[in-house]
Image 1 (cartoon, rainbow, N blue to C red):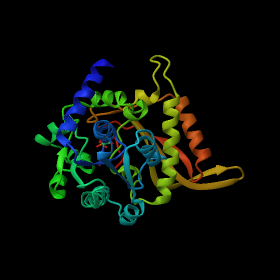
Image 2 (image 1 turned 60 degrees about the vertical axis):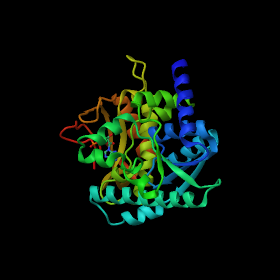
Image 3 (image 1 turned 90 degrees about the vertical axis):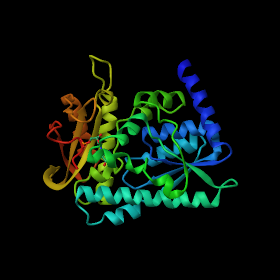
Length: 333
Ligand code: XMP
C-alpha cells in the first residue's frame, strides 16, 4: 500500500547512504526476519549483498530449495548455500540431552557462518570484500537484549542475530528492521514481494528438527519427520473453519510434528508392523509464554493421521498432544 511504499523508499535510501559502495553479508535462515531484511537490503543495494544460507540438515521438507528458489530464483539475490548437514549430524551423534543438542547446533552454526563470512570478507567479490554484517534484528529483540531475558530467549535468536559476531569478524552492523514490530516486518515483507505464506509462517526454532526429534538426532528420523510434518502442515492449510473462513494454519500460532524414537505394534494387511510414533502439536497463544492446545476438528486429525500412516512407511501411530503451557512447553525439548 501507499504507506508501506513510502516506508520502503525511505528505508532503501537510508541503507544506500549507510553502505555506500561497500559490501554486505547476511545470514539467511528462511525465517521471517532474515528474509525480510534480505529482501529490503537487496532492493536497496542489489549485488552488493551476499546472503549466506547455512543448511544444517534439520530443516523442513524442501525448505532449503524453497529459500533458494525465492532469493536466488525470484529476487536474483546472491546466495551462498552451505550444505553442512553431514557436519551437524556427525557432531550430534550420540548426543541426547536437549540443551547439549542446542549448544552444538548453535555453536556449529556460528562456526560455519563465520568461516563463510571470513572468506567473503577476504576474497571480495567486488573490490574490497564485505565490510558490513546485516542482521534481521527487530524492535522486540532490541528491547529484549537491553533488559532481563529468560534463559531460552538468550539462545533463541542466537543463531542469526549473534551478539559479538560483528566485532569478532571486524564488520560493521546493518540492522534495517531495528525499529519495526513483527506485524510491520510482515507487512513490509509482503510489500517487498515475498509470498504471504512465507511471511506469515509460524515460528520455527533455530535448532530446527533437532529439538523435534526426541533424544539422539538421526538422519532417518529426520527424513520420516519431514514427511509426516509436511502432511500435517498441508492439511492445516487446506482445512477451513466454517465460522471464521480461516484455515486451521492461520487459526493456530504454531503447529508441528514431533518424532518419538519408540516403536509400537501395528497391523497392516496380514502382517504386524513395529514402527515409530509421532505426536502432532498445535497451539494457540498470543505471546508464546502461555499456550493452549488447539481444538482441531476431529475430521482434520483423522485425515492427517490416515495420511501419515499410509504415506510414511516407518510410522504406524499418530498421537495428538493435549497439553497446555504451562506446565508443558510448546516444543517437546
Ligand atoms: P517453548 O517450547 O519454550 O517455546 O514453550 C516457546 C517458543 O520458543 C521457540 N523455541 C525456540 N526458538 N531456538 C529458537 O529459535 C530454540 O532453541 C527454541 N526453543 C523454543 C518455540 O518454537 C516456541 O515458539
